[in-house]
Image (cartoon, rainbow over the protein chains, first blue to last red):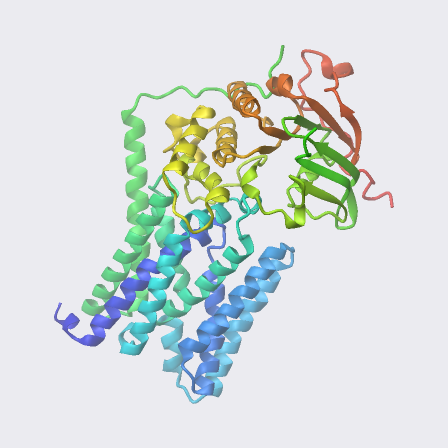
Length: 288
Length: 253
């Protein structure tokens, strides 16, 4: 526990907790609309931003936010068009993003250790300024995702119905895209671009094993995200492992535990309750 | 006679250059219950999707409550019931949460739900007989109960016009009766209905006018036609494949 007396460890913990809470709050909408891996794609694009930032001697995180936002908006526009070439366009964007990042980082004076910090995260090198950025943006994402829950739920659940309800569907979709980019870039410092999607998706996947509704899934996912972030940093500090990887492994471990407990509970309930004979579906139309 | 709720004037819709709806015109006045009938692929669903602006018209025009579709903003006056709930993504949602989405048109994006919203959701659930299922995940409901959830979602917005796309397709008899009951209450309250159907079933007595779509055009507008030939036989099972899906054969060009 003494390690947490050091300010850099306190910053690491706070940053991880903010991201652990914000990433699943956004991720649930992405999972709901079957875009679970979009965070991964945006992360690849963000890497080009990091490279450009290092090359131009600007804040890599700031440039990454801008580039990732552009990438996320481009992905959303491709998706909204609904063309079959969509996944090819996405592939170009993903691989272009990571190749561009690696090349630009190479062109700058940065060492490969610097690239690793963005690929796999570097929680313990977060400066007080970084922490402020992460906290402000993370809380902004959190508040937006919670405040707009009914509207975002409607759009992700049934986009056509949302349109007939007169909701600003395009604006809400773009908002989600921008929120994804922002979340990816702040989470980049914690878990790295290669592991970002895990924090957005795994807690949601775990929560939906046991929750019955959308709101309860969201609450459970955020709780699990918070737990994975906190326990991951604690494990990393005590066993001296990479914090990003530890956080993700804790998230996956909680998924396994929840899935097993959920299955056991359902099994017990089924055995406890008397078997209800399945009611056959009546015929499709009423016959005379 | 009061102003029409819906007008479609010479509506044409094409997907990838292939016309699906050719020169369809339709007027629905307040209080009417209009059924759009036709075989699979006749263009009947396309007609109502065009009315709602979900597919663009390549020519012609649509007005809703006297306003051109492009400038129409009062979406709270319309309740839409799609054919079925989209394929589940795995994220659970309760019946109550889905029905509550029906209040958004009236409430707007930013305002949190209030007492009136909760009351309307409860009333809509009661109207379709799903009050006791409000806390259950929709994925655990039967097809007919899911369909009733969707009509409850539309009713929760307290619309003046209901637009339903094949509301009774593949729905069990009990749900069809519940559905017809909810629709009857809506019509008795002065509501207007436009619905697409393949079979009318228990909805039949409610229908005031039928429009038959055939190969993208409207070939009948008036009384509900009697089932003809073997369609009228009591043992007709209504699951036969229907005429060519594509009016102009894909390979015949």
